[in-house]
Length: 218
Ligand code: GAR
Image (cartoon, rainbow, N blue to C red; front, side):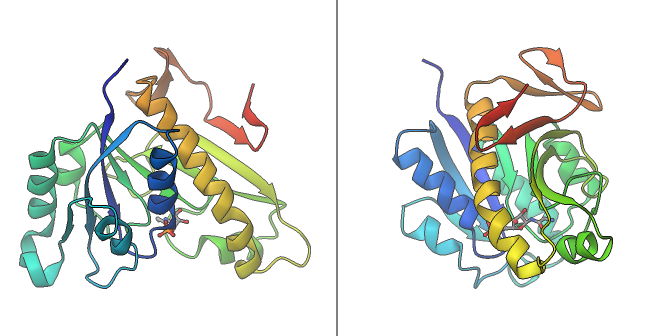
């Protein structure tokens, strides 16, 4: 048996992805050891998921860390020695120094089919562009915003009557399941960053893994 994966999760908001990972751990589906939850918002509802389950948590923002936020986040994470740092709705841009400290060990969830729609307002931008499909990505974090190697994605068709609200509602549960599947690969120590790409079982991927509710697509 391999060791549990030590994971630190950074959030800013509701933390529904964090919640679904805690539930997957509690159901015995993911061997995760949550070493810490960090929020840059003191009133982030997602902090309740940490408080309610005994996971250590910290609020690190301008009020608590002044101009040294990146340093404090980095030192706090280093103290917890996570195998993986998950940015899960963490809506703050990190500097290159912090990112580089955890290169290959930091991943981010993004609600678009990267490389499309980096940054904010992803749902609205896809709708305005008249896209036929939408989706979510999980990628390694590099110093460029939403630009690191993409590990996996999930897709859904955009319907004619979709708006941003309906798209969020349909994507979010898929995003939870995609994240659980990606975390399972990390628990099994199957995924690594390989230069500007991703390797699965030591083999460099030609393209991001594609997950559907039926499982991984060949
Ligand atoms: C998720 O949809 C995630 O992809 C997105 O924030 C949401 C967090 O939801 N992340 C970003 O937009 C990062 N650029 P949650 O707080 O309910 O887990």
